[in-house]
Structure formats: structure tokens, C-alpha cells
Length: 206
Ligand SMILES: [Zn+2]
Image (cartoon, rainbow, N blue to C red):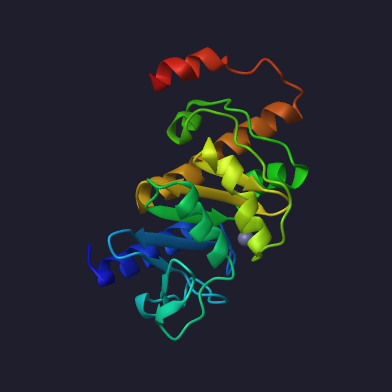
């Protein structure tokens, strides 16, 4: 895949995530990794998605140094790099503040797999990280453990993080976490507790 394709894919996905209601205005950040060349393409800091163009995507090395581009990378660059180290198969990372997932992140409560969309991200409960400030090295470290067993996690008091083999998969995982969170939220709201048995997921995953 060429440099221009990575840039275009990151821009397209960032805009699509907003169209799908996963993030608003400037929140959320998106990246792809070119493992052959050891570089990451990431959305810039402080640019709203309606202004976002391919030229604004920052190209960085695995230490976070900007290789190309006049725009500073997202403040969450350390978290993205950490996700790529934690999940060697990951080709893309999507971080949003989608509403229902963020409710659970802010409550510090994992999202149980109450509907079949959960199968797409592995079928396990979505873990919550310990709290770390947005944009810090601390939160970059705190995602490592939850990501060992899950392609998605919740950032405490903050939002969600999803990885995928490619950008489409990462976005889909973010969308499905939000979908399961919405369903789970409403089940909890009416006091329902007889959730879908885990064995059904194991069957679906086999
Ligand atoms: Zn955030």
C-alpha cells in the first residue's frame, strides 16, 4: 500500500466515524500502521473532520517522531503506538468517545457481550483500563494489559479504543462496541439481568 493510500484511508475512516455518530467535531483519533516501513499515519491534533485532508495526516516513526507533515499528530500518539506494540497483528487503531461506550468507561464498568455484534471483537466482556490522563504516557501503558485479551477496551472516564487487522475492521469493532453498549445500557435500565449465555458466543466463535 502506498503512502497516499494510507493517508486517504485514515481521512475516509475519520469522516465516516463522525457520520456514524461515533465522535463529534474534534474528538477521537485514527491511525494506520505500515509495518513494512515502521511508520504510522495518524490524524492531526485539533483539526475538525470537515476540514481534514490527506496532507494533514502526520507520518511518524515508532518513537513518535514526525517524519512528514506540517500538522502535529494527535495528542494520543503514544496510546496508538502502544496499541500497535501490544497487538502485533493490528493494522489500524480507532479511538472515539462514542456515547454509550463512554457511559460504561466513565462508570468503570465492563460491557458484557449481550448481543451477537460482540462476536466481531472476540465475544468477551470489554475491559476497562485503569485511569490515565488523555494524551499521557501513563494511559499508553495502561491499555497494554486490557489489549492482551481484547481487540477493544474502554479508557476510564474517557472513551473507547479499538484495533483491527485493517482500518475497516478497527472501525467495525468500534461501531459494534458502541452497539453492544447501547443494547446493554437499555437492558440494565429496565432491570433485566438474564443476559445471553456465554456458550452461545463460544459456538459462534468456533
Ligand atoms: Zn479521547
